[in-house]
Amino acid sequence: MSSGQANVETAVTHDLTSRSGQLTEHTTPHESYQIINRIKQLLKFLGPAFVVSVAYIDPGNFATNISGGSKFNYNLLWVILWSNLMAIFLQTISAKLGIATGKNLPAMCARVFSRKTNWFLWVVAELAAMATDLAEFLGGALGLFLLLKIPLVYAGMLTGVFTFIITSLEKYGQRVIEAVIASLVAVICTAYGIELFLAKPNWPAVGVHMILPSLPNSEAVLVATGMLGATVMPHVIYLHSQLVQCRRTPDTDEQKLEHFRLECTDIMLAMNIVFLVNAAMVVVSAAVFHTKGIQVVTIQQAHRSLAPLLGSLSAGAFGIALLASGLSSSAVGTLAGQTIMNGFVGLRIPLFIRRFITMFPAMVIIGLGINPMKALVISQVILSFALPAAIIPLMLMTSRRDIMGALVNKPLTNIVGWIITAIIVVLNVILLYLTFSGNI
Image 1 (cartoon, one colour):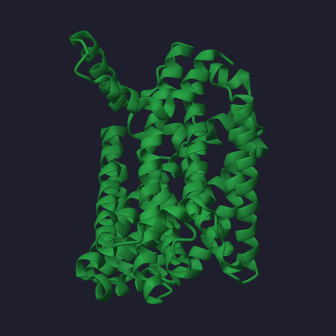
Image 2 (image 1 turned 90 degrees about the vertical axis):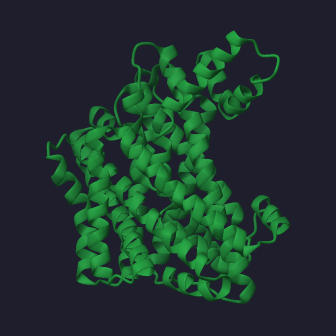
């Protein structure tokens, strides 16, 4: 492993701070010019992580975070922190694969593994993309229903139309979609900023429970597992390795290392914003519902309860955040479905049909009026099966120097990666067991 890679990986978290610190009154005009150019270069690379970050603030996160806060106060905030650290690691490894190879994860699987293995991985990944879209479409439909009182069936159809419009913007370039998704993320952040201001939480308690792990009872274990399961999702592991391609410069190892360093900054910014939003969901739920003895079990209940407790502004902000989450995460899920369908087995299907196939199951379930909770349970089971099929091939390939070159995983990275993989797989098996045993 080159010393350049070691320096890259250790400097990621200090990148923005060091740059801003250089802008002092003692900086020469030449140094200022260099710093401004470096900042401009960084801004060109921001975007892919903001797209994938949407998966970590999707409607599933709304449900688990609100439930956790209303039932267990601030006790499960540490789960949000550790889930986010795992997500940062996995997204970094996925981006690194795409930068090193010039291919996305499904396409690399097609090169490395046998055709039978790839057909299996493709089926699992496609089911995961559809299951993910199912939850996202339900969230978007619920957002429209809560805000505009549109019947759920028509709200689901509108969600499908809006999602198709967003993904169709891809013809104008990936950066256009990135801008739209980033705008929707900004809407979610603003809405929960309003919620936090109105909720007036106990900040010392927030700080304590963010650091100190706490599981008050066996039900808290279940909720904590669900919070992790709603955070780490397979489709964006596939997608991130694709999104970095439009900025990739394939000429030298040094250019790949520079791209990786800038993408790590992108990941740190996007994922820490997501961490703040998820933490805000738990904090607001604890401050508003738990203090009043209200245990929230559905998103609709959360919306109804906010109005009398905090006023119509809070309820409206919640509905807008849910709608923005549903629309943005539906678009991201559909983009992931496109990457998956073309990567593993090289199916050459027109773009319109690929998008439609990914969205179709969710639209059918909403159109038939199937119980949303049952549909979410089914999607959870599918995702539990699908997660190892994304993480294990990713770790296997990024550990090989013949594939990764200068960006091959360091030994410590491999150790951390396999530990995280084991934790996620075990917790998802627990979710699977609880689902079939009727306890969730």
